[in-house]
Image 1: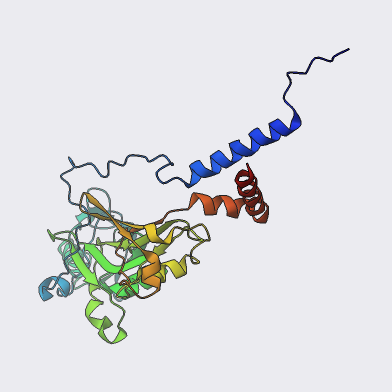
Image 2: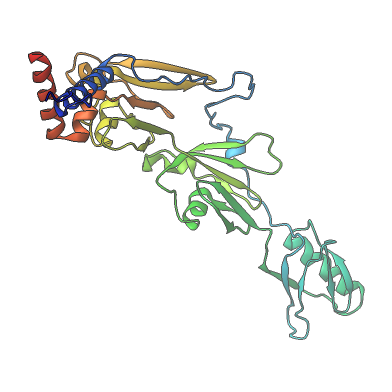
Length: 338
């Protein structure tokens, strides 16, 4: 009796189909342009706002080093008043919202906007005119002043009390010092000054006195962030590298800070993406020639993006290790025999 041949595929046929599917997938991975490419439109070109505008340092000595200012009283200030030679008259008063204080014997006195010396003379005159003292000598101590402060924003946040005047380095030190990513170019917004004051602290201690400008109550000190370079792709570490003041960072130095390149990196297809204003430029660099000294090592700029693409074949081998390499060799040998 003749047996009917089964139409079910044999194990050898299934294995052959699986091998050819694997080989086809590997070939497709290695084909150039096989991966999908996303379209990038870049920054909006209809934005008229300036981008990455370099700061212009202030050089006018009259603005950088103005004469000292007397403390002027404002609402919220707490005053302790004394009359020399007597302990009976020592009121502690706070300046009200309307700028006045309420004192014993003389009533309401408007003091907002006056200096401490002017306020002492006014109170002495009022006491003398009221017939309370013949020639009173009044002294005032400003014991609390919520308005005599300097505000720090940006990479530093804080409010530093400043009565009269302080130096810039003193204010920054009182707020904890510059953080690692802080720029040494400091902007000071001062009431009554139309343009912001821009000061470069620099890194040279011998020239630090030039940048140690006086700071007055009401000033706002803005500490910006230093420029950053971004490493993406087949680097061992995708990191953001801060740029130090007056210290150029080259492409090879950035790669070293990123831990070097991975095995799967396509060294001949490195891309440097740089934004200038609202225009984004992409420059292709053969990094192998840079490492061999056959091409210049470019100096990176703030906000540069260094993209090192990945080889699909190398990535597949790296993810699977030796087993993937042996499997690929077996597939190629099997295909050669067919």
